[in-house]
Amino acid sequence: MKLVILDRDGVLNEDTADFIKSPDECILIDSSLKAVARLCAAGYTPVVATNQSGLGRGHFDLDDLEAIHAKLTEAVDEAGGFLGGIFYCPHHPDDGCKCRKPKAGILDAIEAEFNTSVQGVPFVGDHVRDIRAGLTKGCVPYLVRTGRGTEFEPLLQQGVAAEGTLPAVEAGSVAIFDDLAAVVDHLLDPKD
Image 1: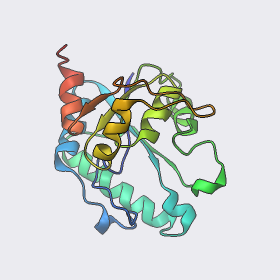
Image 2: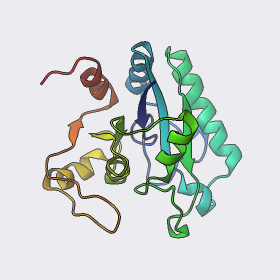
Image 3: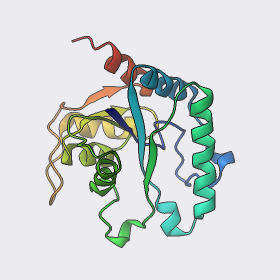
């Protein structure tokens, strides 16, 4: 099985500082939906790994989150693809859980669900948290400039020091692309 792990906000849908609290607020990125379909056609199984602290903060409830994910899943289906699963951390950042990225618990859950290792699996995100979570488990991280990616691009180009159990990010070691469609172009037809 060829997995690809995708962050949600800023990769598959537009991000917002106010949390995405309902399906109406979830503005999907059309080129990302088509990119997921291309991954599926090439034999990949895309899965979503997303922090959703809005649950823990009380900004929305589980029914709202499920409705948002139903909208996303339906749109991916309509574009000709599928999502192998949506894994999320519902906790407040102060809860000290093991699943909130940059910790790797959410990736442990993906490994358990698919009975496979995520080592070497592409992990596409728009935040340094995504990169660090992926590196912790040996994923191949990609940063996209959509969402908050442009905010973190300079930081990743300079490098990020190790912090506790979180790995360092070596300067210039993370491939950076404009959006998910560009990452998929690279994955399906890599040009050195």
